[in-house]
Image (cartoon, rainbow, N blue to C red; front, side, top):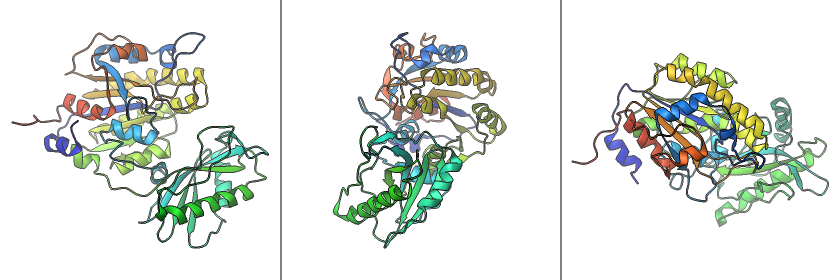
Length: 401
């Protein structure tokens, strides 16, 4: 597998433009009643035409049988091997809301959740409480005081918040308190090294105090923490690929990924149409665009099959606007699968299509899991997406003599 260092040696700075349309949680599983996935159920004439004009396949983001988180999934798409570059969710959330992290800070992603009288989780997302309610509860958590550590709790969106642990000698080598399922109790944070013992005690003390403070605030009467992490050092996309990259994303975590990789986060509205309008407004200013669609993933996690299919149709209706800009390369894919029938991320390969004037159309006439399975690209690693896009944009020189 070619490395970032090797790509950098052959990368060319050109005027050609690449657009990555990342439909979060795109892949699905067949609904028992119909035998069709969300993507196969949705009416997608424009995506189908794009697939027919391009080349298709399926991508595996981390490895066969491995269910990727959103961070590793996106890193892979942008060419950063997620097994080499491990980034915790906490840092991505913090960067996504423009928090400035000090050296030594440990950040964690938090969920307000619902527990019953027995302490078992009944809703990991507390009914997706409003962002306004989140802000009120985050202010409450900010009153927690723990010896030898400073805590900064900041609301993100709906049920999500970020907590930053600040102090001397802290470690991010901890396990999550989020069990990633309902019907069980939140887990304690466990130290994975002797150096993390004190940080684990601080995190658990914070969770215990949060439970006391939130007792009367149903449905947000407890918290879950995951993705303990510190700021990593990664080469930017400009450094590696010689690009001028920009991101269009509405959810903080994905803006955090973009910021970490050196993309310019463009201000945009909250709707999918707003994101496409932002792309048009800035199209001549950059040569790489990451356009992120979050709503498909949320619908999949909620088990709402029909909503996920409707959102895919909404994206499809805007594809003519994208094609009208005439980018040199269009990539459409997802960062992982989120089948509504599973109500969560899964290990299934994700549909992928690439359009450029230099590709060899492979006869696929539909953008779906089954159709992409027969595409000329086959099933391939997600880290190969970026070199493929760069090549089709004529941004890679010959390798070797």
